[in-house]
Length: 311
Image 1 (spheres, rainbow, N blue to C red):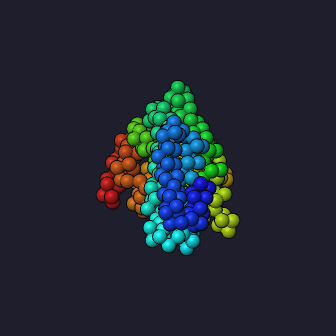
Image 2: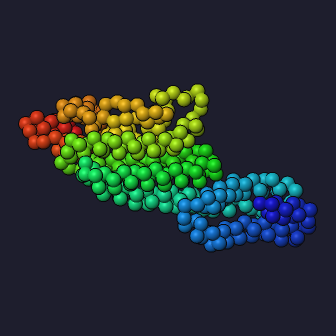
Image 3: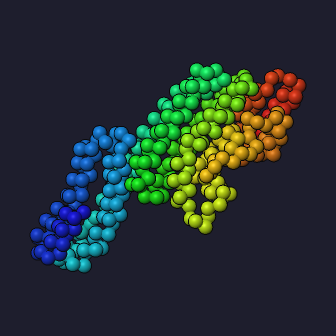
């Protein structure tokens, strides 16, 4: 922007003909940035990198700065340039560039997270040592990826952008893991315990991310209840994941009623009272979960009928 401002200052002190040259030079400088940077830094923009976030910030800054250029200098432009000087048309281009770069970074991270979660093979048979080890490694990989992203993003991103972007990633993780677990069938009792442990581990390993989000909350609002209310709003799948996991994690773990520990009648009652619905569960997920956990019996048939009837 120094070059742009210098050209426009020169335009203010020049004749109309020369001022127009300086004006076009200022516009060309911005257009050159738009044309050259994505090509020159293609490799960095195609990977999870600090450079990509810096360019995102630059593009967003330029989109805001450009809006004020004409107002800043128009009064001092030669009369022949005042009516023709225009920069506002360039602002949306840079704003769009910023959005595209950020969306690509988020997508790259989401792809890495999905690949890591897929390594758990759907969290099947976690009561078997080898399968448990694979699932555990998968959870650790997810935490490693997100911690790496936090280290890159947090110091560079505007607060609101960081908060929104991290919440998108967390929502993706919780949604994917919850979906995989709810697709399991015929779970052994030991398997449910292992799954609880893995979900507990996932939340504990993400403490630094939760802490980074907590630090963005106003001091007056830092109560557990208010913070969790905000988290539930920011991360749509969190309440569902939390209900399945059997815990809330803030600064420390807090346990409460959870699906993996609930007896059959309690699950049915929780569905009928809309507790599970409010957490994001749908009837088919609850029915499949009941079939996976509980053996066939008259009580199970009755509860499945009640769940289906009240859906």
